[in-house]
Length: 306
Ligand code: GLU
Image (cartoon, rainbow, N blue to C red; front, side, top):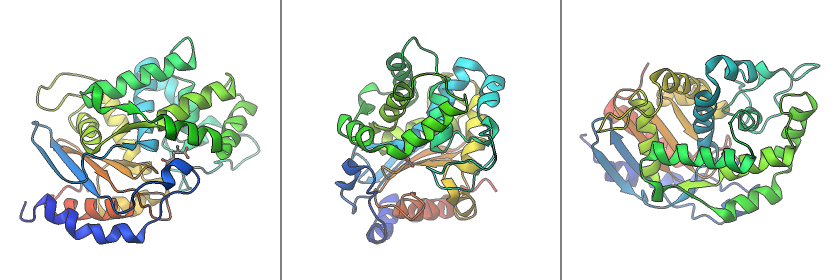
């Protein structure tokens, strides 16, 4: 790199002032908007980190690709594809993606809330607590370090107490028979999933498994089948940044997933996983300074897949 990671973080830090903390989850409103950190992990195990890379945050929607992986591992591609579609919605993350007289499962996208809530019901387990536990175990397996992946109970309780929009989405799913289980049970799993917390290192490690065809960086241990990693990367490319995915593809050009906690997990196939954190968001719900930093990194390291 001609410019160091530390210098790129410093160059992007002023952009943290242009974003907004999300108001609809009260616990996230208390974050420090000036934070910006990054961690890069290459497929052969080289690590670089800068800025606030060690601050813990809730991964929020970045759990959606992990939920999808768990659903694929539990059911295979055909069953998953019969329950949720893969077309980009072009709509905000919490949109009621409802365009017709009936809610068709192929109108659901697992990278936005309604599709992800539906995916929770595809995870195997006797109870929704068990399903969440299995999702947490998979997250820890992908991150490689159990202590890096925790659940932020304050964020969980805050979202559960204020999640009326997600409740509306879940009740619509129930009305149209897409989920059959108790709505509050399914939502409890979803809210817990969104409250999983880690730092930039955790996101870089998970992203690197996706970049490395499902194998652990460095050791090459197979964690998920390569075809599932490819499936997830494809959907991240078209929908991972919500209705900002096209703009992100042009500016950065790698599969990525953002969360309203300020994280972005980016996947440079065959090269590296990247974890970014900066909690002030742009109007679409993506980390504003984080996206600028990824744009710089992509240019500097020639990361775009296009
Ligand atoms: N927990 C958030 C919600 O359901 C996730 C949204 C996001 O990270 O974009 O509203």
